[in-house]
Image 1 (tube, rainbow, N blue to C red):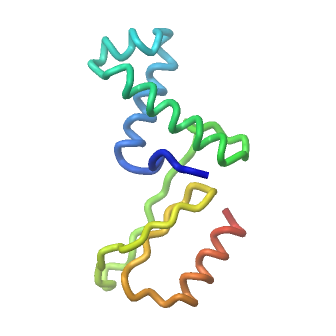
Image 2 (image 1 turned 120 degrees about the vertical axis):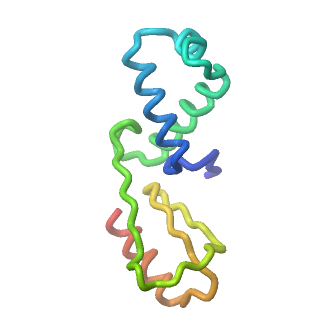
Length: 116
């Protein structure tokens, strides 16, 4: 299934908070956007992204109740640029650096798919 965008980026988390504010406001999406200076098209696009992400999860968890946790590598591990990003159906993202051992990556993905 085609993904429209990341729902885990910093910008996505910001927009999730903005949309939660809209839902609490009692205003139409257009009115809320005008008050906040955010184009209606931007708000509509993010709302669609979060709805689709929630639908794809199929686990009944509302998009605005998701919790994201950043896992940081130990300080002594050198950082390398990711050459591949894998987004699992659960919404978890795995950034794969150049030169990763294929067997290790396969084991990690299997664990994530069975536990998430």
